[in-house]
Image 1 (tube, rainbow, N blue to C red):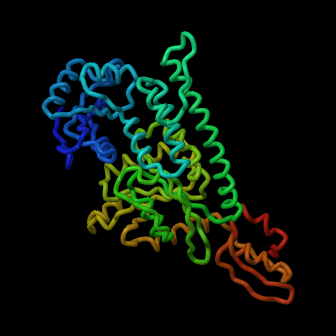
Image 2 (image 1 turned 90 degrees about the horizontal axis):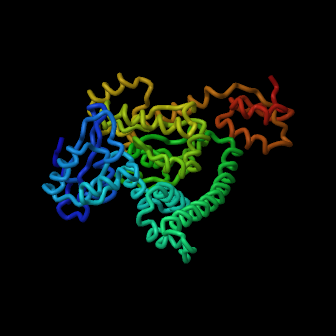
Image 3 (image 1 turned 45 degrees about the horizontal axis):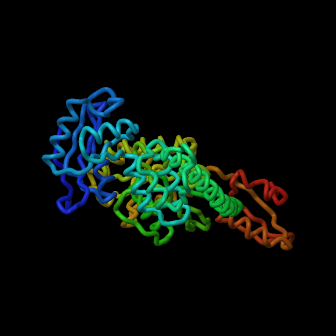
Amino acid sequence: MTESVETSGSRRAKQRAMMIAVDQTGEATLSELAELLKTAGVATVGEVLQRRSEPDPDRYLGRGKLEEVKEDIKRAGANLVACDDELAPRQERNLEAALGVPVIDRTAIILDIFADHAHTAEGKLQVELAQLQYNMARMRGLWTHLERLGAGIGTRGPGESQIETDRRLARDRISDLRRKLRHVEQNRGVMRSRRQDSSLPQVALAGYTNAGKSTLLNALTGAGIGVADRLFHTLDPTTRAFEYEGRRYLITDTVGFIKKLPHQVVEAFKATLEETVLADLILHVVDASAGEEKMLEEMAAADAVLDEIGAGEKPRMLVLNKIDLLDEEERAEVRINHPDAVQVSAMTGQGLERLRAEMERAFEETMAPVELLVPYTEGSRLHELHEVAGKVDREDGPEGVLVRTRLPLGEMHRFADLVTN
């Protein structure tokens, strides 16, 4: 199956990609690969899908299909082939030999996008680590890559081949990156401990990339975080606070998910993704304008990553974003298909009040009513109560302040000496 899908401006693009994939279900689509390539600045000029039970272990596609792809490459003027799966090194080499143009797989495209979007020191370290882990099995050309990274290439020992030198340099660099990331993680751990010690409810935004998580963070907190309509715009976690009904909440935006998210990326960004694991509540943000079938695919992909990082059992709330792009009939259909979801538009503010109320209700369910007597000599305890409980009813008495409120079950021990009932 060949179809021209030339993107806007592809006539001027330096890289013009022919997309290929093995369709094992008969329902494969390359729309997401095209979006990844667009984000990476590569034009798409055609696609080829081969229906087969599994990829060829040596060439990915069958011999006959390769001839077809070669003709399509010439016809479309492509100078690059992009594969929708991660290729084994021998598959990549054999494809390049058969097709006569460079071949890049899905993992390399995602890593290239991450490298372009990483801005903080931690993000750059994480991306470089993921790239090196990916390249360890693909050592061709890695000498120049390491030299550019400043690895400091020395002279080779007697009988040592260039490939062995490359591998040793890569291993050394990986060790160095892991050491630096451990230091960064320690600093992150200190900040995380401070947040946990504050006893404020912690919420994490999770979901498919480009679902509008950063826009939602801005809408809830006024954070002013930069947003853009492109995949993986946010790589570095951002935590901001907002207040509702007297209680402060901490909410964190992290890297978006995608189908077949490379293991190297999950491994390298594990410390960042831990923000989701440690949250009290996960807001699973989904683009409601994507259509039901795509929504379900993206929700399944996000669920798979949450399971992989150990957050599968965390309390979760489904948030359907971008409802401003739906008409009334479409909203009603979404409501029927997902009755427990909260419909919002982070762009216009629709539904945000209900979302805040639902978040409060979710936390209220983990709290128990309590009556406390706070002596006047322990006024600082009142401040602690406000931080933990939010709304409190107080009554001044002869022995101190009588407080009626609700406390998280995990915080009861802190105020056990003040309980009167």
